[in-house]
Length: 355
Image (tube, rainbow, N blue to C red; front, top):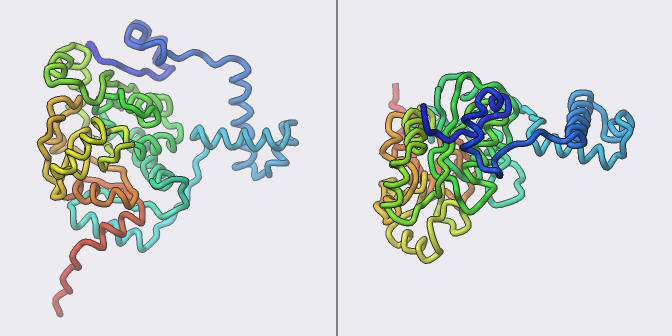
């Protein structure tokens, strides 16, 4: 395949140098870590291993590594923040299982997981959703069930990739489903795709254009370029697509324009966003001036694929409801509080007939 824009994990760079170098900007190009940086990473790994596997206290870790207790704490925290420590709690809460079954039955989902409620630092349940999202992504990459996996964008998807441990991909390729030059670096699809490539060794491909271009003619010109044609071909082949759900929050990285433009979309009936396109409260695609400018496949192109949304937070309940009504989703990962709210809205099932 010619003209695609890959973000290659380090192990592929030597064998594919001619491909990687001309397509990567200086900001994307990796460098080998310096010796001090390598030593710091080594100490962080040893500190985490001694603490979580060896069962040593932080004070004991400090004595073993001949460092201060404060530095031992920092090393352990660093290993956790870099996704090198994963803690598994193998439980099933009956209440959450009941919510999963009810949502799956009501909306025809083949996969539904409800994350138990946990303390969170912000309004979105990123920690809880990230754990289940990471589990989904790691299984998909390791199983090799999907030759191409497409990724959307959003804070919950970024949290899921951040929570992933290291694993080995089985001939799986990752492709960004939409333009990646968004306003928020933390949720930029380029950064998310690059992170999953580094953690899994999978080849990952980008769409190096804005989420929304200035005019439909600009979109036609860009799609005619050989590089984007190759990326679009991979997008068409993605059998698993993992997306976030937007709620027209002006602070969200998917916001297409100014607050006034978002207010116009709300007045037109938009309540949810998927891949830069909008749904009304009944889950119907809403025609907007942005449809001809969004650098993503149309929502109709998702038909026949496994499409899993990772989203949550009570303020997103209306957006999630619309996404579920749309019939686009075959899977959902949601937090307990929001899942309970969505399930409570459903009509009670009729009582079973007497024998």
